[in-house]
Length: 285
Image 1 (cartoon, rainbow, N blue to C red):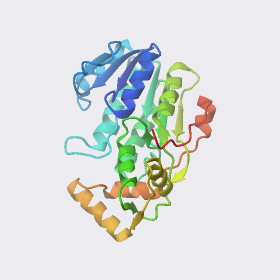
Image 2: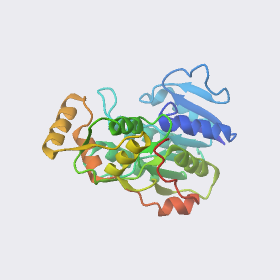
Image 3: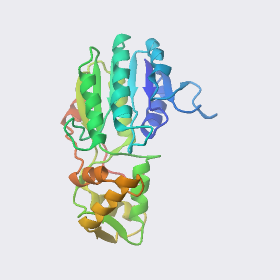
């Protein structure tokens, strides 16, 4: 297949590009900077600004499938959630429909909801909704947080777990369901290669556990015992308020709200469409 991959320089995008090129697919990877010297020679790299779609939208014409892996965790003055995760994706979807491509695969986020108070998941959901209204086959994948080689989130949690005292916001009982990058990439590959996987939204996650259990297992994998300090709610809220006001610090109000509400996937559609069970959590990966 001839595939146009956006967000190709990000954590998920890099793994998707490697897997699909190894499987013999032809990729055009949209990146912000010139590809490194050791980049895969079988991949065409297109250097352009995501937020300036006029620079690259016309390149869709020679492709059959679009995979959108673009996402940000925090807004900046130059890049809002609305622009990065709603407006430009919708322009991408419309262009793909105009060029009559065969399928669009959108990497969204678990918990995406157009009515959500948090702009991060709301902006993802608005793009998902717009995609479902396009006259072109589509798939929306909504993963929990993704871990594996190069994952920033897991590196952060691993560092937290080996501290002499590990701060834990709230009671640590809120649920998480991390999915390994290889399982997510395998699901994306199946979306590319199987025409029957179409016009559906699929949640993706791995083993279910509490955030406390996640840190406990990460500590054990490093030969340590977790020594938790449960941060009082008032202090957590203060840290989040400072993070929101300054764009600095470990967490902001929206991120705290998402963390405390948990992040759990319904894997019934995942099993039905992809035919495999995501692997148990592997703290060494």
